[in-house]
Amino acid sequence: MRKSHPVRRAVLATAATVSGIVLLLSLKPASDPGSAAAAGGAAPPAAAQSPQGGSQPIGDGTVTGDAASTQYGAVQVRLTVSGGKITKAEAVQAPKGGQSDRITSSAVPRLNQAAVAAQGAEIDAVSGATYTSAGYKKSLQSALDKARAAGAPESSGPGGGGNAGNEQAGTVTGDAAQTQYGPVQVRITVSGGKITKAEAVQAPKGGQSDRITSSAVPRL
Image (cartoon, rainbow, N blue to C red; front, side, top):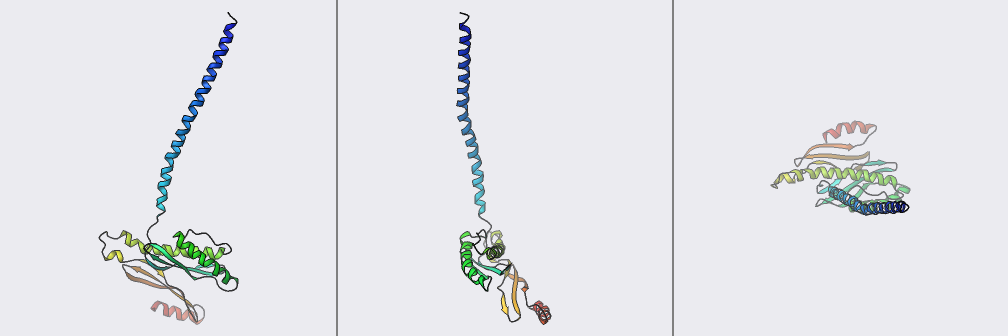
């Protein structure tokens, strides 16, 4: 009879060990759904953040971004906005001469399409036109900033829909006009529907042009 006790103890110990393992295995699936539920609980906030991609409104009209200098020449983008959306993008300045003509004729139309499709400046560079693409994006962002500045008063204006809602404010840069002595480009600041400031961001330089420019531009 004494010999049977060690066997019973071994059997009981084995049974207890097996039971413990079964319990541990049965507990693991219960913990996984818990972690999955926690992950599921964390997902909605992330999803909730995505709508904030709808950025502040942009004012309707045509706006030209600042000219961005590149290694091969300036790039300047003009946007047409209607209904708060970009309906047209075009480069009013782009690198010219030699190989630049071929690159510009190929890259600029694709960049214009990308800007309209993206409705913003987050566009990919065109392969083989790295410098032009970088300049385009920089000028595009400048144009967007100006368009948003023009659209801000409309969104913050009185809810009654008076004339104040139609009075756009902001800074707009005109196209560079080529003259015999160099380009002339004007930037105006608008507030309350009126031009409050006008300045020449480009004007002829060098030699006698410096004297004429310094005298004529302030009067203009």
